[in-house]
Image 1 (cartoon, helix red, strand yellow):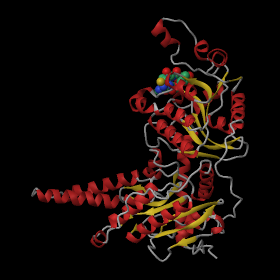
Image 2 (cartoon, protein in one colour; image 1 turned 180 degrees about the horizontal axis):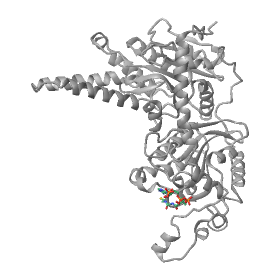
Image 3 (cartoon, protein in one colour; image 1 turned 180 degrees about the vertical axis):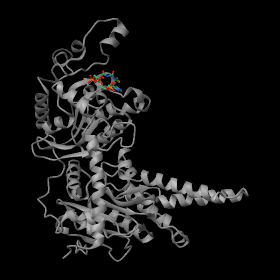
Image 4 (cartoon, helix red, strand yellow; image 1 turned 45 degrees about the vertical axis):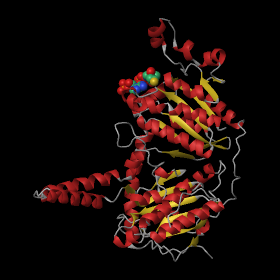
Length: 532
Ligand code: COA
């Protein structure tokens, strides 16, 4: 039997303390998510409803098949910036007429749905997901276009939105635009570049220039409807393929379009899987509030994978990294999970070998992060830690099976890279509220700065200001700590969302299902030169 056993004692004070710390973080997270749900706030929501319009998430709900889940992505985008949490855009994966689709919806209650730099990042990330996983892309459009005060940040890179739509189309991935309101100037190219276009009567406004601009440019007198109304585009310009009498009708027609796409998944759905033997609720008590205390990731794996069944690979070698095979909602996965925090040479070589094996067998990889990075020190440098870490990074970079990453605890330094951090293009990356990510821990970073400053003063023959040093260290520590937190990093789109640990199996299952829409094949060769 390869069913994992568990040593988690739910009656122990440690478990209770871990659980309390996690629940406190989840309460904080819920408050931040509530800000995204509130959109532009009561005043703008009421005004929007007063106009007889549906909110962004209501539109999505009506679009999706009843009682199917919506995996919302990056709800904390723009957290910690001057812009509203959520970045005036809702994105996620949902099922329409049995087809998993990537859905984006402007939130018109936030500054007219205008796109700021974070909305742009979020929209581009959504396009990447659609392209990598061959998900039809449905845009629910109502936007004031570029957020004008921040135009310098978005005008030039923003062109990628329209480029992506036509590249998706060229790759045979359907794109559908449903226009509920304003979609003018550059925004007109969202319907303009989409394969299928639906517009709502007397609501859609799709023109390159509105009446005032036309008056300025050519002197022509015009009005919204004749320049860009749904009826005009459906009857005269031909930009609209379908004319909807109201919003629910538009969403109904969008569903009919999807029903006729003949979009087929590359992989059949797996048979229903056996749930884990242990209660996922217990995931709340696995990660210590203080990340300096290690935890056994097998306790997490036991609560994520089908039947808690895990065939560990090389269990006696490189024991600070657990590797092994399992299934998650019926999909085979290879798992790499940090066990003791530090990655040594043996762990790095084991990881490189394991990643190659997964590629030979076409098995997706799941990275469970809790690492302080690669080991430093004379013994380890002399033992070749750089070249061994490089082997692991080479394997991760050139691997061609889909990757999933979950930041459970620490994800520091090059360890974040080796474990398939954001820059290594995992198909999806989520963080738990307990996660922390930075170039190194706050204390270490502040300490390094202090040592460098002390040496610099000594080299110049100057006295060192000890009080100033203590104050600087404290300040730097606090700054790095706050910049390492998941809501800060999620705000910058460095993950696809911060999730409740208890939802991890469901979230990963939804991701694996979306991933299996596209074909994939592991790398049989094609790795860089492995330094031996
Ligand atoms: N950039 C920055 N802020 C914008 C914006 C934009 N593109 N569009 C709207 N806003 C702001 C408004 O200033 C307003 O802020 P306030 O409430 O603090 O005064 C808020 O968003 C709501 O706008 P409002 O005009 O009251 O909403 P509306 O629902 O009646 O109209 C639009 C929405 C989008 C039709 C209208 O605001 C508009 O035409 N905006 C400019 C569109 C444009 O030309 N964009 C450039 C395209 S590249």
